[in-house]
Image (cartoon, rainbow, N blue to C red; front, side, top):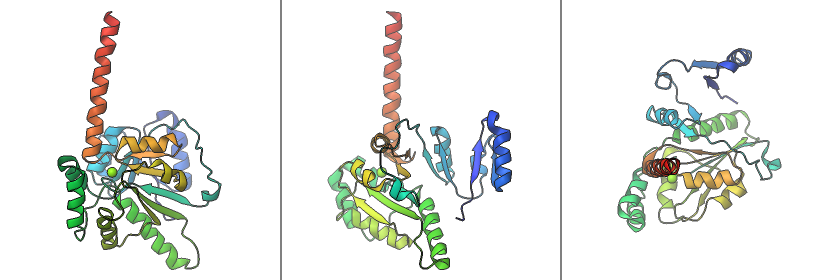
Length: 257
Ligand SMILES: [Mg+2]
């Protein structure tokens, strides 16, 4: 697999161990003690971190990035049939595609969103933050098939979008075609929950910009990462901050009493 892994750590306890492993494996290392290391990366990467600020910064610097969550539940699904391949599931809006459609939906309502997408179905959507990662996987697939024409590529990609398969989904399919990118399978859910398709796909990682969908994955034991991009993410973040502030105020009143 022509992946380049770059390990970033600020865990001083493990630094020598990690550095030794890196040099054994011939991998790169980035000094995360440098103030602005994310913006100094010269190639596009997939940046995964539990720190929302770092993931946000990576996206702002043009990298694919997502926030990871500790997953206490053991994966309940049967992974036996998928251990020989990597399965990656992507949401559409604000993940593979830009935030415009989500903005339209938020501002004008769902019906005007559908109308907009239908009218503009021949206008490709703009790139979202994870498009470069999908592109890297597809390029890898092309190289693999050039070398091994009779073998199956061991990476499967899935689109799991809330879009309607006909009206708003057409623009998505046409956009992917205009980019020359194909996914293994696409699920258009018309706003229904994402849990059932995730349960069926059993991805090794699922990317979505809405916490509610990330939670659906986490509840199934699927490693699910939040893409910090777009109006949906900002809205969720504000709601969470408001909730935390409210909680603080309640906490104070309890301690005073
Ligand atoms: Mg989305």
